[in-house]
Amino acid sequence: MSELNKIALKMISNGKGILAADESNATMTKRLEAVNINSTTENRLFFRETLFSSESMKEYIGGVILYDETIRQKTNSGKSIPDLISSSGAVPGIKVDTGAKVLANSNEEKITEGLDGLRERLKEYYNLGARFTKWRGVYIISEKYPSILAIRSNAQALARYAALVQENNMVPIVEPELLMDGDHSVKVCLSKTSEVIKKCFEELVLHKVDLSGIILKPNMILPGKQSKEKISSEEVSQKTIECLKNSVPTEVPGIAFLSGGQTEIEATENLNLINQNNNTSFLMTFSFGRALQQNALKVWSKNSNDIKAIQNTFNHRAKMCSLAALGKWSKEIENK
Ligand code: 13P
Image 1 (cartoon, protein in one colour):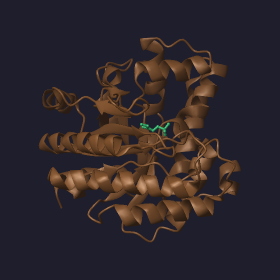
Image 2: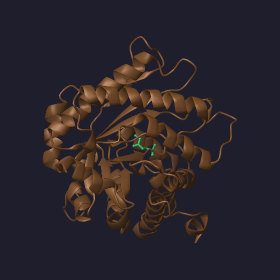
Image 3: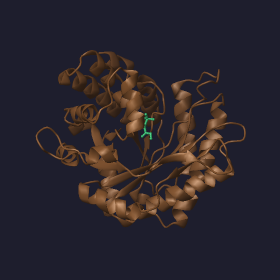
């Protein structure tokens, strides 16, 4: 088993999943302002340190994705944030893309940037303690999108990124996210997501990426947010499994879903059924941002600095997500 494969498995086995706490300062500011909290360096550190020191980190969280600001910060007691994460048994990771910019000649679509100087930045992040990384390609769904231009250019960037990350002994999370926005049907989401993922793997193979040492982070297969189509979690799970079965090579050890704007309960319920119906060789777990942190943020805004209350909320959510990663979650356990 390769070193990279071992790290990937440590992050996502036995009901463990990934906490995506890598919101850029701009995104974190939006999240904090939505609950009337000032987005200062200290506040961002306070919230993240509170989550990373909670009890559930040991049992349910296998990896934490950090943002550049956070990986350089220290706790109250002087420990580095990556050391705090490692001390709970989780693997520290880092978002290394520099964001999605308008793709030239495709007015509405985006291309993710950050390849220039990446080799050097990766060496620095490794020295700061990171052992895995994340890069997110983002795609919109409509009749004409994603265009072949967006599909190819983002797949190539993801593959160049993944190859550089493995060269530097870290596990790349490969994240092609088709957004939930739009009125498309679940069928369209299925076909477009499959096309995007297949193209990503074509490029990953071309760039000689070791597929046993990556984690795929896709969206679940859902109807668009503005679509009138209502489908059950059972159908979401079947369509999601169908998509991955047909587009992901079996060497890939695991898949960690983004939550993408689903509520905490929706994301948990869907992941639970995906695991109950999982007839693939892939581990299927969570790499949630909002669906792990939303309620904890709300509790913070109501109880100012009550660390215990924030942690209790986060502990519950992490436990529910972990049960879902094992296919053992239920509404009864959720509400107990
Ligand atoms: P959400 O779970 O909030 O979609 O965030 C996951 C993520 O890391 C997006 O890049």
